[in-house]
Length: 287
Image (cartoon, rainbow, N blue to C red):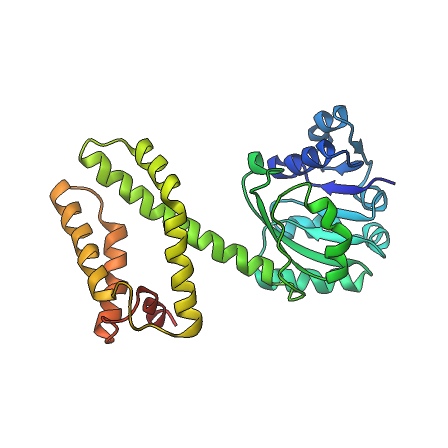
């Protein structure tokens, strides 16, 4: 028996298998294109002949393919279903909260314990102590796979038995990340328009990110408790800066789509009478 099976050997699946091998785990792998397994076999992994053989080889199977549709095309066969019975299935494929609920029901119907996971990292970050993987679902499945998961990431929070929690938390994380990156790309145009270096600014943001994290934490508490007053910085005050983004874009002749989008949300909040409330009061116009 192997310690763990990894199904799906794209960039992320390969990184997962490599991290497990580096931590002296006995790893079985399977991929629809077997050639992708060759480097891992040279590192000590065992290539299974079929997906069913791969699942049968280990008490825990990690699936990391493009999406749930691809995962079902691999797993939803009588042979794999028989092999899954009594084992742990950890799903790292990209999917929505509802797909996580559906996959849990599918796994339970086949006698497997199911854990849904979301990797908040890129392949080169796998195995690092500061890497995060969100997990949720069957508590026993988490306990049986925890030691393996911590070979993949230093931070593996278990978010409880609501199986959709990992997917929802990952989407919330990505919304925060992508929103920040959209702002950063607009920031890059501001800098370029004045002949300043974008890479130096990126390093500066990295250095001051704890302060930014503190601001986001505060707004999370504001929204959770519905305590929007007194504000640390009111929507009306922030609106001055949003209008300045528009003015700078006009002066410099750069794209203004990002600040224009922000202006629309801020204006809705002000029109609704939230001007003297916290920035987090923007959520009221999104509800």
